[in-house]
Length: 228
Ligand SMILES: C[S@@+](CC[C@H](N)C(=O)[O-])C[C@H]1O[C@@H](n2cnc3c(N)ncnc32)[C@H](O)[C@@H]1O
Image (cartoon, rainbow, N blue to C red):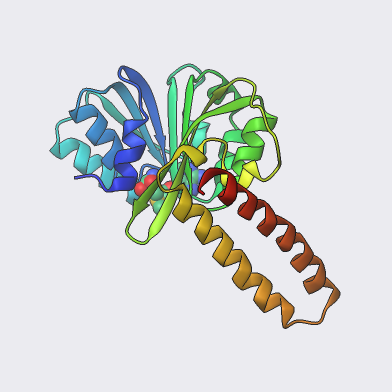
């Protein structure tokens, strides 16, 4: 059984896809997709031999070696351009994810779909995608345990942008049923940081507070527009 987060990632993979799952770890998503005849081929990669070994054991136990191949190595360096048409990178920090994409432009340019689930720095990855000529055409929120995860699906295209705050709150997340909770959490976290900064009497704290107050107003504006 896949967790809600992994199931939501799997649901974004198109039928017939040739998929690369970068940083596969346990290999659960590739196995689910192969078992359910959704993919024609998967390359499941990881930088860690230990992680990849877990995936190999699962693939062998499920007798899916003919569909899922494992490769050891960093990011997309182990994939040749054109080998896959869909890429999942999930469960890593947004900065690492951006670096992985940046370093293998030839591989991602040959793909029709990027399915990304950064654990943090989501704004950084959205900005990078838009700057590189990617359109974020689907986004969703998934509640798994006490966390809300953001899934970003992109393909080459022009992304219209109204305000920089969209890098933080997403381009499509306002359509998600969890948006109210998601933006509410952002508001309360930002207010808590501002309260802490108010106790500090430095120039740095003042500047940071000003910046966060601006962001807070934008979050509140989004809440008013999309939730109320
Ligand atoms: C937290 S796990 C996430 C596993 C799975 N993708 C998920 O979403 O549940 C992160 C995995 O990424 C792998 N990893 C970290 N840096 C990597 C890199 N540069 N290239 C490939 N895999 C990497 C780690 O070894 C680990 O197995």
